[in-house]
Image 1 (cartoon, one colour):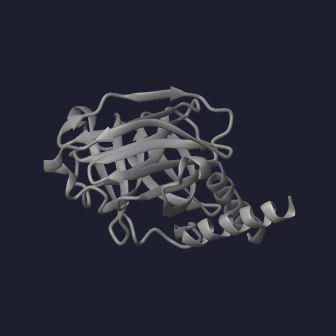
Image 2 (spheres, helix red, strand yellow):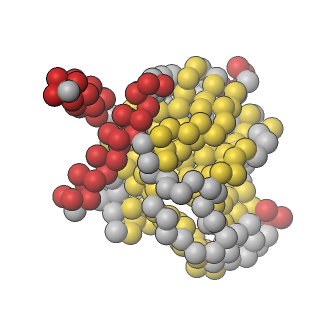
Length: 240
């Protein structure tokens, strides 16, 4: 039993060592570009909003609401390659009718244009959903589960044109849906990573933390990797 424990510990440490922490939100958002990707009804004026860091985590703050808007907060200094998984830890903390989650796209988005991206996000009632666009064709809404505990969201790239989207419920990796991008649109996908927000009211939506790239876990090791992510979170919280 002791030997098995040591082997499991060694495997866990190996997987943690391969994890690349991109942002723990202890600094600023200078690496990111905020883009409104939907202005529903082309309303004017626009909402007043800001992506901000609060308590070492990311949130979206809308102080004046005019109409439905969707946003991407992206960076292009990291990319999601085949065989990798993008994760961000999640803690409930929001008001109003708003969604927040992960976004993977093709370069910095064009203002008020939704195309070539996949997302997975949490609604204010705790439900998990995924949508996105193949070119300018919208994927059907997928999801609706309300897990008791959400440790993190993930977007994994299993091939040049295929993405898995889901969440970790404690140590269990839950696959929500698989999205396939047409070959003509897939080349640039993954060159921008970051966050997605859908605003339908005044209020705060968050909190996301520990944006991380890891190898996609094998089915047998998915739970172990989930534990590894949790260990990283707890260790960081203890230091804070």
